[in-house]
Length: 251
Image (cartoon, one colour):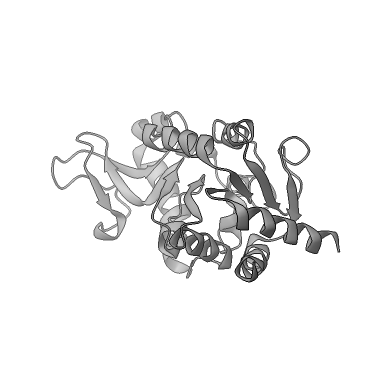
């Protein structure tokens, strides 16, 4: 009964909140069939993470691109990856004016596909490519992703996926947007993240220090659970968020 009691408490907090922020990690995407990068079954158990180092990409472009194409583009195109019910609840709350934004560490674009309009992509987005020479951005669907690394149609420069490689900084708009959102919200929902990746892992603490109630949905306790979390819900967000939403509808 503890989980059901906590679901009711989460629904009570969120029903009364004026500004909810969602904060999502790899666990959210895993529920849609995307393997995590770390831990059991993680991508980096099969591939060398150095292939995603920005210096390695410049020095060994073809070797790096081969892995990037296989991991991020062949896999996604061969699998019908779609938003799960957890993604859709967050989009619904934004449409209702309850949720101001989603801060995500994921690069799969599923929050936008689900319908969220304000998404701070802490680690960028694989659905775009950016030219390393002129900065031009292009939808990945417009490019023919062959065995050869893509080059810019505008200037001929080498292109890279518009997500953050090791050795690159967090996009300023995503970082400062996330900090401001955390400072202003009165409810902050942590979903599917262990809290081990810096600097994204600092964002929930900002919300807590500014008075927000922290609700956490995770399969296992995280670095947040015993320190800043007010309501801990153990399980899948695709199952728990719809239950919370249903109770909020009744409130």
